Length: 593
Ligand code: GDP
Ligand code: MG
Image 1 (spheres, rainbow, N blue to C red):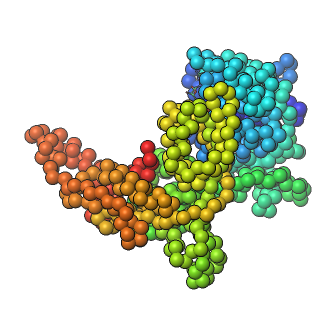
Image 2 (image 1 turned 45 degrees about the vertical axis):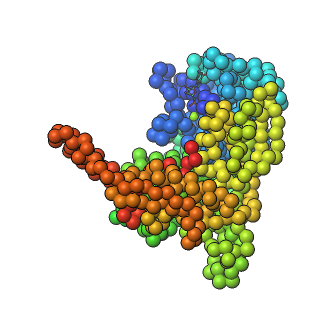
């Protein structure tokens, strides 16, 4: 394929607006996959993606398309829509010259439509607006086209109206891709790890050609590798003899860790160095949590599972950590709470691991005033990603918390409800049509990290959407709060919070915990404490009746079943002092919903 007949493009959109479905249709039309009724989000290969119905990792596929006597090679990259995974979007865009911006004809422009539009706009890519789901009864493509014109300054007649589900007008989309998206440009834009073959780097070839036996050098690490295999993605890896300039494909070259195939890195032929392509912003963790084996004998198994899983997800950071109550473990950094949940789910499903996860915390900072601590840390400003390391007020001149600039798109009637109690400062407001507004707010990151997205969805009956970007640090009055069960601290629930919110949060956590812990044979005091001072308390009454005695009606099989269930339940419990707590109770307790 000559360079002029190659197009590299991404599909971007707000979550659920139909990217993966459109990708299915494009794969079918071009004969890349057979046309059956079973093709549903074919590019979502991970089990968690299929179960949750969301895309987590960007996936690429090469399509071959003939139009008016010419043959084209179209490299398609499907991207995730949820805010936690937006780094995957910007990573994908660096390998593209154009995008399909998909907008739901019923929901219209949403927060991630705006965020993704600007990512593509700033990268100077060709943008083709695609209005999807025109088959829906409530579809209003005209209204959506007006929003697009008003907000993005794209003429109405450049929009394509389609139904990805039914295949209506999808062929037109391909023609637009060929007409509007310019050819070429390239670099390493993703990498995954395969147990047998090592790192598989997804690359876009900028110039020349590459094949097995070539020696390549990483501009970033200066390490040298011999190429073992090259190929294209259809969407599974299919080896080819060579890759040529303009192609998107993969390369295997004996790299042992994904960090060796850095996103945005440039590879060049040994002894033929080139200028590296412009750099890339790496993913930055926003949420940290401790992770420990349920049983310390599982430590080594968990260690190797973590190593293998992080090889496939270089956006997770890992540090060794240990705790008096939980033993040896790790402190992991994630892009957001969904990212953390997805990671845990993958640990369970793909590696059969069950773990104890502590309350997520954002990265706070402290400016130290104590000479002793400054000496110990060898610096005056430290980052705190573990509540156990929160320095005392007396040894600190100032605490700092991370902030984000959030974009909310919502029907106007929900504005009041949404922001209650989040310490938000309004920065901007713009009407996109008679009913909908875009609002910009500065938020402390900890106010939105755990449950804001879910709360927003439920308060607005699903009509509001949200996206955010990093906005630096601000001074904050912070304290550390502990939760005690009969006087024993629950390490999982130690949190750093804003002083003004201590009483309300303490009370709330105690109440929620009271509901989440099953009654036991003795009374349990549930307390919130700041240092030695108790600021909230709930009491869980003792449990009197015997579950077996009550249900046992002489039926022996029933009795066995109950005992078995009780034993299984015990495995999912954690003991704090003499109190048994279901392991999943803590994360449920932390969500305000
Ligand atoms: P993504 O999150 O952007 O990848 O969205 P998906 O492709 O996973 O689609 C989200 C949901 O919208 C799925 O239930 C699809 O079946 C549905 N959907 C996608 N395209 C259409 C369409 O053209 N019409 C209708 N009615 N539903 C669609
Ligand atoms: Mg998808």
